[in-house]
Length: 220
Image (cartoon, rainbow, N blue to C red; front, side, top):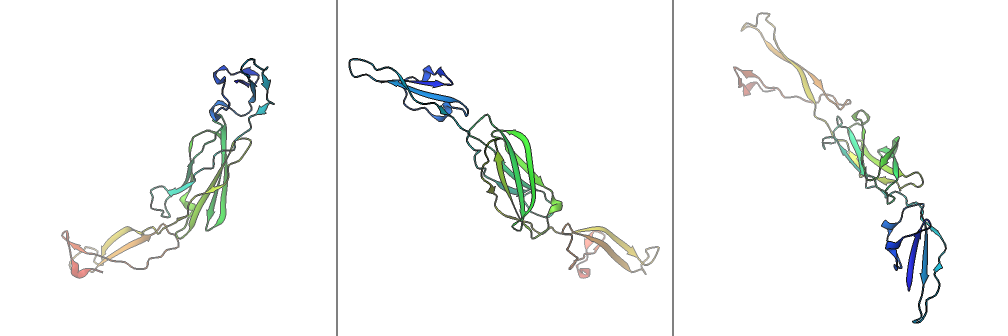
């Protein structure tokens, strides 16, 4: 037998005598015809054409959605990142993306990114740390759209916001003697700060140093 392939009415001579062709030869919107003639050992038949087959759109590939914090600590002062590589078997397609953020299993924020991203892009978006509180469980979900079809919604794993250690600010040392003489009592004061805004100071430890040497008998 002999076969011919026609794309949008034009014979594809490089595909002659093939009975199947692989996906990399086709692009959505193309019209294909397969034609064949056979031989009985003496004579050839005429070429007979198939009906026309139109290549349709392939939905974007389901993303592998990931979540992390900026520095990996998952603390309240870190932004969260939702990211994935966005692909589509129709390599010329431009892709739009929708992100959903869930806090403790409840939808919190939805954002559309209608920016016609290039196929294969490494997409990333941030959720600001002002949205999070220690103990929250966060995950994000992503889907892409190629102008015709959507991928499925794919969820990330769950990330738990962890505690941020407090900081001590404005540490001051004063004497009740205005001239700092030996008859004065020394007092240390400080301010407490914590990125976990609901936290309060539960305990403290103090140290005293004389001429650069810690005075362990004065601890706490």
